[in-house]
Image 1: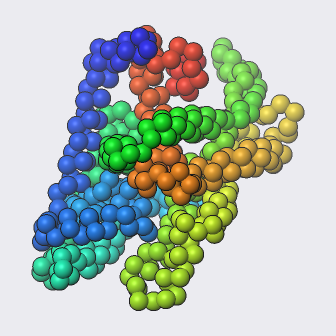
Image 2 (image 1 turned 120 degrees about the horizontal axis):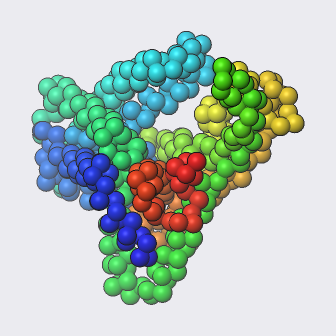
Image 3 (image 1 turned 180 degrees about the vertical axis):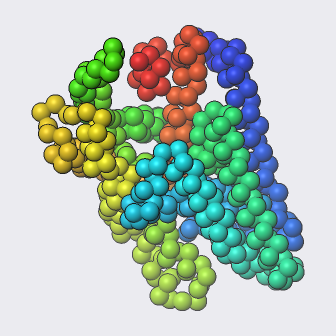
Length: 449
């Protein structure tokens, strides 16, 4: 404990690290402020009544509101969040697999990355504009009060166009803030923007738990829940950090009077290469019936279909788990290309001991990746279903149950580990002790190599 306190004190002794931390905190404060500034033309009082009436709503809108930290339910300027940028990045990443032009651009180095970033920004604006139009329809259709008064008194063409412009500009501002955090702050800016939106709901979740204790719920049960949450977090960290290292030997080369190569390096194949993306894909598809049902409340078909795939249905858990298994392999195949890795190794004179370079190496890497992806996919499916288990079996409130697993917990743990590694690297580069002297943080290994 004393070592951690000393480490936090050392963080603010390093001027560059202190400036980066302060800049990151101020940027995240700006993100939270923008989540409470309602777009013009919306009646704030009616909006609060509507939000209280639909506080426990499910569906795609509920998941979206979780990622943007309540900005969607507040009809704020940051209601779209950073999700259009994430969607654009995923689309271009998939395009890099199927389009030869994108593959060529990815191999062009820094110039190619600059072009891809430019295309990502342009596609982000297009996606944000389309989503903004949908959000304006959703907000204009929201009613409150006994007479069902719309929260937008004058939802005309001017309000729709101006709101679309404001919401799109809000996404562009968040994208810019995220890039500034990455360049001038600490951690991955885009991930931190999502992180602060999710973690902002945690105090409300704790408040709900305290209210249940005051209402007569045994406090011992909450201690057990906290212990269970700690064990789940430890397991998520273990799987997130887990990797299979493949040794790569590089032949010696003599260039002039210098000798290059002759060393052994490692290719780390992560157990959870796909990250949180399989859960997001599966959730987005499973929430479609509930979302459509909210628009067609008179339809018996959509209402029955939504009940079949509700979180209380056993079909939900089964379908959810199978879809996560599928999307884990699908996204892993997109994110990691064994053939490209094998070709790069062959060009640089590297080889896996006992395996022939080229196609044999690609098959060897792919076989290992397929084997270690299966336990990672099963673990993701279990983590994704845990909030449903906590809510239905342990009677945990939905908001607090969302931190037992699923997308929220994976994003929180991943962002915290990434930020911790960057802080660790800054400390070790200036000969300070890191957070743990006997840990296995990758930043420590990289800094000492």
